[in-house]
Image (cartoon, rainbow, N blue to C red; front, top):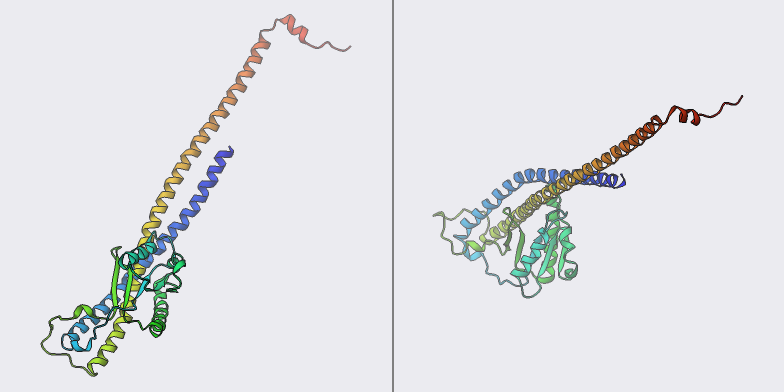
Length: 298
């Protein structure tokens, strides 16, 4: 009885954990639906800026200075919350494999990523990440402030973003200097664009807009991949808990059957003992019966 009670208590505890994990999975799924709208709009903005930059640079290529890749900083977009597998560890592994030499400056976003970088705080700036889409803007403000501070200290000229893409793979994207992939590209239009600013001033303004939009896109993309990973991870955990609960139910049923069999055996043994006593009394002779009676006190 005690063992069955323990199993039932354990199954009840697993059921509560299962409900919590299932709720977390549902919230993560709803977040992916919301991020789909955010990400679609932001991608359209980035593509529009890139198209404008390609048109501009096809006529004003001299405004884009060639910069050496020195004092590079890597922007790592991790997770603020857990239950998403090896999401953060794979970022650090990809960084080590793509940048095996030296110790580049790091800008790490996400509390769970910070816990894996305890020995690298001397070369990393840690920023809390976003748990939901509405927190992306505040995270972006902290990133910009950190970049501004690092630029003052180290004179940063190159910025690379390292994050999870929508297909689950890790993307390395160069953000600064911008528009390098448009060098030596043939013009799409015959006439140069009409500008209200000097070409260099226009490029500076366009770079600011591009960096702002591209960082938004990166944060939304990473948060989308994080929640997709969390949905898959929690779905596997919920399935495992369901299997464990079914196994405990079978064990409880087996123990209950054993208890019922023991109870039936006790009842049968008790009934058999009563029948034996009755048969023994019935087999006594009348004289023995009289002898067995107590004498009357007169």
